[in-house]
Amino acid sequence: MTAGPEGLELLTAAEMGRADALTISGGTPGIELMENAGRAVADEVARIAEAGARVAVLCGPGNNGGDGFVAARVLRERGYSVSVALLGSREALKGDAAEAAARWNGPIWPLSTAFAEDANVVIDALFGAGLSRRLEGVAADVATSLEGRRVVAVDVPSGVDGSTGEVTGPAVMAERTVTFFRRKPGHLLLPGRIHCGLTRVVDIGIKPEVLPQIGVSTFANAPGLWLAHYPRPKLTAHKYSKGHAVVISGPAWRTGAARLAARGALRIGAGLVTLASDENALPINAAQVTAIMIREVNDSEQLAELLLDRRFNAVLIGPGAGVDDDTKSKVLVVLASGASTVLDADALTVFADERDELFAAIGAIRRPVVLTPHDGEFARVFPELTSLPKLDRARQAARLSGATIILKGADTVIAAPDGRAAINENAPPTLATAGSGDVLAGFVTGLLAQHMPAFEAAAAAVWLHGAAASAFGPGLIAEDLPEMLPRALAELFGEQAKKGD
Image (cartoon, rainbow, N blue to C red):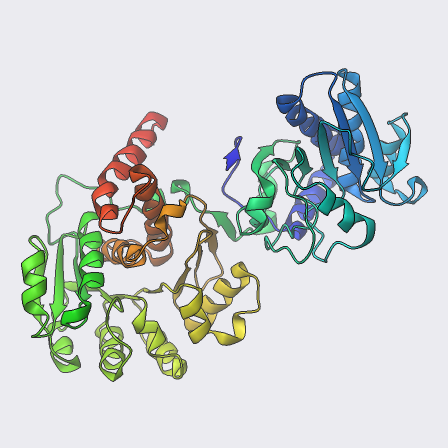
């Protein structure tokens, strides 16, 4: 969860350091930024604890600890019973952190697991987003001892890598986290998001004008990222101007996935959708669809003939397709056709041992290509990337393949070959149901059919997928997702109308 105004940019620890440095070089003293940060932390504590409550502040040896010293002083001024512990010596503090400590005239205790035992609220100001190593020693022991306590973390909970969301050892589990200027990838990526609790972004005096100098390329996935490219209905539109999506069906005993995808493509606005089915699959598909059309396609040669008609401008292959040579040859035909392409499920797995052929085929065309793997499929196609953090995995896969990547999960990452990436955060747990990924692939295909750019189409589809699931609530099955999409879109455009967009 997130509260408070913020932009969609997500800053790594290094990029946030650059934002600080640019602000300070522009004339804002670093201690002023620290004072603002510490006051914001104190404000967050005041939201959950009444004046007079006991607050234990755990300060680290850097600027995160400096923020903690400011919060301690402000809370004491407001009538709280505050005690401060420091990891390391006061004499070792430097710069603004040393100045913040000097402004705290109370006792400073050595950090220990027993220090915060009687506190109503604990402020974790040990380490910020820049800590990428495992917590050790007393810091690790303290992080473990805080389990189940009311903790407000400064920037990110100690033990969480703010740039990746990874947790490699003991880490603080916070009830709330206060971060500054912009969130970091680790606030959205798992398991970091879980450790952060409610994350609040506060303004400490850094101006958005520093962002172009930093060159941010990672964003939170939200309508503001892609809405300008979304194909809104026009009075002059007709079904042919809204594109014609093709979904390639699996054999007769595996047709459901393709129908789910086709329904998704139609619901999200493709003017026409055709299920390309082999002879045996025709009867079952024809019996269960109405607005979706059916064409007999028995092999890759017939598929190539069908796609000679350029009105078929977006194609999805993979759901229920089968891991065999027929699927492989059809994928290559689709890519050679020049249509925008979505490769899902079996269309990825079939190239596990021959991915160079796939990447060469992707590189030979100019139309958008989107790959939609879950972790297992990703590992089959990109085995050398599996040890990397999720954001890096998706980015490198996009560059390597030349395609936009949707690396699925509760923290889905969308990555483009040009380095842009978005992290999704609106997916409810109810999406963990058979067929939901097929609907998502259909959403992407339907948006590509309407000529939405690949990265924006992928990001929009992922967000709307989550919004539709949330609109339905408990008991969701994949068939519900296309039917809830109109409500999600109505709410989205209703909110935008209120904003005047």
